[in-house]
Image (tube, rainbow, N blue to C red; front, side, top):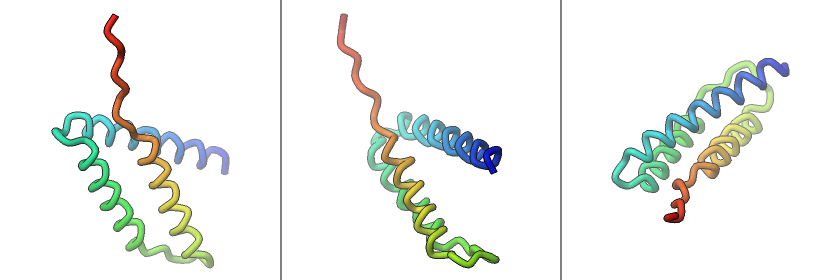
Length: 82
């Protein structure tokens, strides 16, 4: 289970980095991230989760994880001129 959690964390980090990179290349990164987050949330709401007893709990956890992931993506801070 720890190996699976480690792999999931690695995937989350890679996805966050990819989305942040694409957003930074966008003319309006905040709108891009907001729209992309909404698309991800729509996909998570529509995923068919078979064979589990607590589908609602899994869906809530997935949505919370997506919100947390997108909450970590902030525009890069401006470095002061030296």
